[in-house]
Length: 265
Length: 298
Ligand SMILES: Nc1ncnc2c1ncn2[C@@H]1O[C@H](COP(=O)(O)OP(=O)(O)OP(=O)(O)O)[C@@H](O)[C@H]1O
Ligand SMILES: [Mg+2]
Image (cartoon, rainbow over all chains, first blue to last red; front, side, top):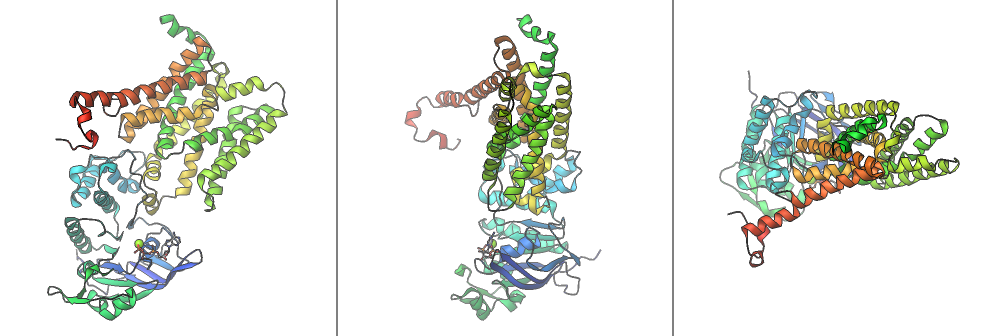
């Protein structure tokens, strides 16, 4: 088996947006988005508040229909949620008082792919435990979901997404509100998924993180401002036109890309 | 004592009523878990009132009132779904609008009939005398359908109750499952009408589930406990009704509420009184503790 490398541009795109626009009521949130996302690549979405990062992820997840244009998954038009596309939202609408354990909540990630007349099998449970291990939450698998801290809840929902995970994983601000070990865990996880051919698309406000943890950066502000490798996109001029304010570019020694000071947005 | 227990079973109508109330306790107990977890008590109450015109029309036409109620319930629940679908009007408001509208229609229709008062009383408060063999057959059939659907779609119903964003991104059609839930709820209410009555059916949905929630943190156990307390309260209530001549609905609900109160006060870990006693045992002088409840475990 050939494991696709992270930079194989010649492969067929997994997810394609064509002239995509989204309006909420009268207001336009996204205009004329055309882009390809390739398997095995990690793509970060950057942009100020209200830039449309969450909106773009929701369209990919099939949560909201585009007003114009289309989304294709491996060449076939996407309408609504698809089992190959997993989405981890910025804010979940979960009911934290619900009587459900961490393990049970994680298992829900499998519910669509398991026959409805049978309970979850031993193997399903093992798989869920494994996903919890990956996000370092297996020691709390018996705890109530409501008894966890915010960052821990986020990790459990990540484990749930990993169980359901198909070929595309969409994450809305996964690095926000979690501690450093969890951020490191996320980086490792993205790496593993990339190597397995999964396309990872995530929104973030952390320029440094985006520079170090993605193959491709998409700068959004209602439309695509810039796209390319972190080194190409993260120039002072481009960042300034996107974010408006002062951007100080510092050159970190361990990366080839100019890495902007993280505390700016 | 034995006579007190066995006497009621000599009558066919009581045998029917016992079977019916056990089933009602189970169905409403299970549905009630989702009703309480989703905070839909108002919807349950409203749905119970909204099926009134169906019952009256069935009475006027001389048909089976369960059939009339089921048809009305389905129409109303689809109506609630349709109105809240518009986006501008929230669910609770849609429920409110339809519920009073339908109930008023029922009252208007009823006022054109004479001699309906006795039946109305039975409809509102439940009557153990009323359960005929054919009613029981229909109750069992409807109840079995509700249980089967509930079992088959347990994961979906859990998902839409627990995390709607996730359900949607997982490809669940929220509207469809909400609608399914409404129809199941309507059917559960309808089969409770004869024994528990229209006014008090809410208690069958809410009280056993609330009791079960106090006892466990596990959804599956909660469903089982809710069904158990519901049917236990039902059977005990029927005895009370038979021997004391209390309307069956009132008797069943009183027993159910008593069970809730006992659990609320004495449940070992969370009970209001037992908690105090335990704390007193561990901290003989709680007044010296600033915040005993928030103190981390040693
Ligand atoms: N449900 C909604 N109804 C109306 N307008 C919306 C809705 N959701 C988002 N918008 C608008 O769409 C635009 C893009 O919002 P979006 O949530 O995609 O931004 P974002 O880039 O994710 O921002 P943030 O960094 O704050 O998360 C904003 O102007 C917002 O006001
Ligand atoms: Mg966002």
